[in-house]
Image (cartoon, rainbow, N blue to C red; front, side, top):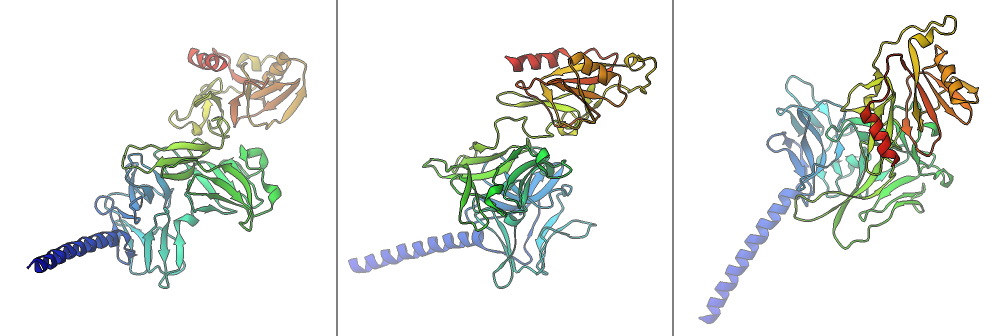
Length: 443
């Protein structure tokens, strides 16, 4: 009788264990299951496909007055998008549908609109998968990868992702707008990793504001990020480490890492502790610069950057006003009507204009005339009397005349430059707020 009771108890436990195991496997399979043809997402109901662990998701996320499509982290309060599809397209409405259709195309469908391809593939996909690495992948019928988000980075790379020669990251437009911004990080084919303003006419040295200085190691180098926060560059064969940018973080905690070129033009390695606390925040492990005025073009045309220990402030040149105070990259324009320049008896221009000085200020050297003058006053007068001169830089007895627009402006207290800006005669000088900012920076 005891034996029979034991057997019954054993089979009950076994049955329960098998049932629990079956449920667990089924739950895992639901998460692990590949995205099959005909699978669809909508912004408001089934909005994303998860990776195995649930760390990453591919699908819709809120942006502006609608939704965008991309790869993002889940389970944390701080929205973190690591890849965006068709990033410069307008947000889509809540009645849009994302579908891996029967033709093997991943498309966005909207009422009264043609299907929009999310991926550009030359052969049909058989299925897709959101991997735990943060890579969203399409496969063909023989299980080969035919497209992956890791090959088309936007502003971020993740561990195991490689930025190859000829590829670049471009910052987003703002913290909440994931469209193309104004700064790039380019893995050049000459072996250099370089940062430029997107507005640069050509990606040449004069427009760069950060560079790895690795061209001596040969062409076709690459940028890598490891799962411990180690950011480094390898040579063309991938066998030699030619430069460490950040080192592995010495920690026993399990962390997630990403490298992003941020809105402010600086690229950083971030870490996040993997905990059950959804309020966990990203921490900066490494950054390319501690001077937030380094990125060229941060303050737009006719603006200049003032930096302190923790932040960067944009200001307009004297006699100018911001085009869009919420987006300084839009630059500044004159806040007075420029009179026609007519020199009569040497005093015509002084009737309408005067020169306003800015100490310790510099911008791109695009001068059309360079004069050897012995004093600041001579440089000031030379620009004032020149109808073509709208600003001048004076340093070391050189007076450099320039036309508008001025770009890449910044203050640099270690620089003895003085800038002269041509303003309307009625201009009364910097406001008290502006003066206060300059005084604070000098203390």
